[in-house]
Length: 447
Image (tube, rainbow, N blue to C red):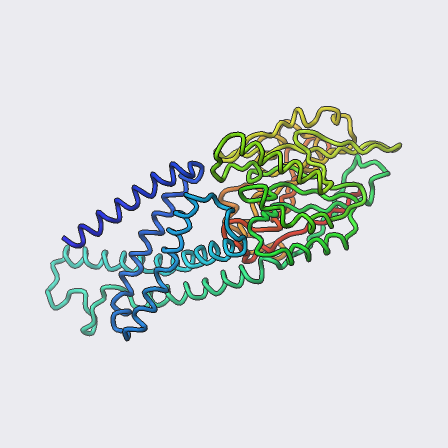
C-alpha cells in the first residue's frame, strides 16, 4: 500500500508540475518530459544506494541524504520562486552558480542511472530466463552465495563515472567557460574590390549577459578583441537570456569595444523577451525599446532586416543583417531577407549577419546564392564536445546540420558561397564549457 501511495504521489506531482509549467512557461513545456525523466531517475538511483546510506552513522546518513536531494530541492525552489518573480530578478552571480550546480548534479547523476538501468535490464533477462527454464531453487540468481540483484561492477562503475563527470563539469563552469579561443579564417572572395582587401573582421556571438557571474572575464575578451585592431566587428545575436536589463551592468565594458569602420549587430532568439513572463504586451514592447536604445548608446549598428553598403572607387561591399529566423518551431521567424537586401543587390560582395544557421540551410543557400558569406551563431557548439584540429564532434550535430566552423554550399553557382557558425562567447543553461571553448573569430578578407 505504501508503494502504491508513493507512485500515486509522484504521478500527481508530475501532473501538477506540468500544468504549472504550461501556464507560466508555455515555450518550455516541450522540455518537461525530459525533466520528468530526470525526476524519476533521481528516485530510481536513490533506491540503489539507500541501503548503503542506512549502514552509515547518523551524521553520515543525514549528510548523504541532504547532499543527494539538495539539487532537487533547489530545482523545485527556483521553479516556484520564478513563478512569482520571472527569471532575471535575482543576483546574476547567485543565479549562475545555482543553475550551474543543478545542471552539474543532474548531468552527473545521469551516468550512474544509465549504468544502473543496464544492470537491472540484465537482471531482468536472467530472471525471465530462470522462470522460463524452471531452474532449481538452488540455481536461482545467486553466484557463490551472493545475490546478483544488481551488478556491483556496473553500479560502482556508474558512480565513479558520475563523479568524474561532476568534476569535469565543475571545471568547465569555473575555468573553461572563460578560456577564450581566437580562431583565424582567411576568406577568399573572388569579387572583393581592391579597397577591402586585407580588411579584418571580428565576429562574436551569443554573449548571453545574464549568465555572466561578473564582468571581469568579459573585460578580458573585449581587450583581446581590441588588440586584433579589426576594421569591422560583427555580433550575431543573443545579447541577453531573458530581458534587456541583464545588459545594463555591462554597458561600460561593452562600450570599450572598438573597430575602425563600425560594429554591426543582429538579433537572436533570446533578445525578443520570449523566454519570460510579462505583465502586459506594453511591458514586453518596452523591453525591446530598451534594447534598441542600449545598442544606440553603445554605438553599435543594429541591422533589423536592413543593410549598410561600403562604397569605394573599386567597388562596393554590403553588410546585411536580418532579424532571427529559425527553422525549429519554438524559435521566431522575424527575418526578412528580401527587405534586408533592398539597395544592396548590386554590391560586388555581400556579407550577411543571421543568428540561426538554419536560415542559411533553408533560405539563403537555396534562393540567395549571391550572398558570399553568412555569419551565424546560436548553436554554441552545444558547449560540449571534441574540437581538436580536424576532429570535431558534439551533440549539436544531432540538431543542426551546420553547427561550428566554416561550411561551403556544394550547389553554389559561379562563385563559392559560405557559412561560418561561431561557437559563441557566453553560455546559456549550463554556465560552462567542455571541449567547445568560447570563441572570438578573426576573418581576413582577400581574393
